[in-house]
Length: 117
Length: 120
Image (cartoon, rainbow over all chains, first blue to last red; front, side, top):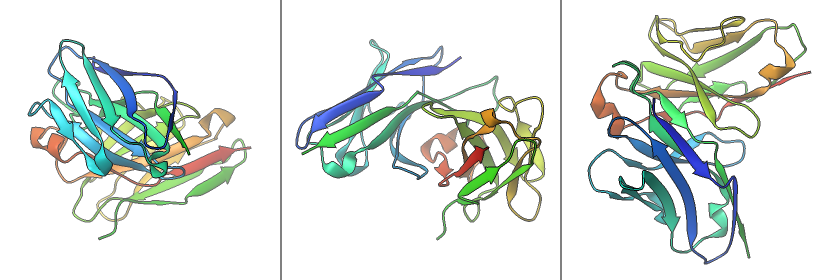
């Protein structure tokens, strides 16, 4: 079964600093991986996705993630944090359950990003 | 171009009452997923429905919970005899493509803003 683990439930950075949110996956098949962002009292918004094309994936709002098979990782980065990036971020993998429900996602626990001036 | 609409946004129920959560998918989407987010946890899959069919309910609790997606109208997640442990945010997501279509990976789920259920 596929799963994801997000290291660090809270990450705090200064405005303008590098953002690094960690995600490791476990999958017996090539994974399809996603990063979502959730602002307070809102639904999830897709930031970017990896679907076995380029290993470096660029998303919205200046975020990117690199798929590293050797490390089973899909860490999310942004060179320079902005105050508006403060939110909760979820890594997710598509769960392949015996050929059905490809659209079923398994989410990590989430990482709350705080950006301070 | 309305997104996924969920209502109500907030729902308060006393223990033992019923909760009904509604989800209208994006226009043209006929595949609906329900997820639950317990406090300080990630989202957990509950059920996947197509119009008039439950495709995968492996994440649904065995008792008190049911879901439907009728031919006409929104999808409904129904919780009977609510308990305090049901307090959570419930998110609906929709997709235009069936879950078994691998090209759906390139257009994954569109989420609503959720219904926050509080059981007192």
